[in-house]
Length: 121
Image: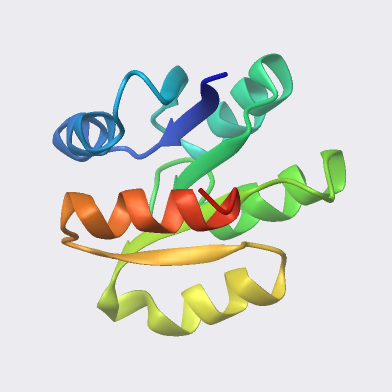
């Protein structure tokens, strides 16, 4: 059975890269959010198996969105995606419940590996 994936990133190109890194036969993209508040709403609607969440987004950043998602679902599988200049924020996200992080720019293989680790694939 394919895993449901929610992508939250304000950059269209990054959402396309993430989508392209996940084989369609194994992963179903159930939504794409462009802001933290939209990510929360789509999480509630889609209940994904994994969420890929950017830190730097408009309206609500990924850290605040993560906090809200963890209140909704303490077992949420969230992987943070961000560039290295937000390293302290990534560490904060891990403390708040993120399962992993991927540094941008990333190789497709690195992203896929992080997702597979969640499910021991």
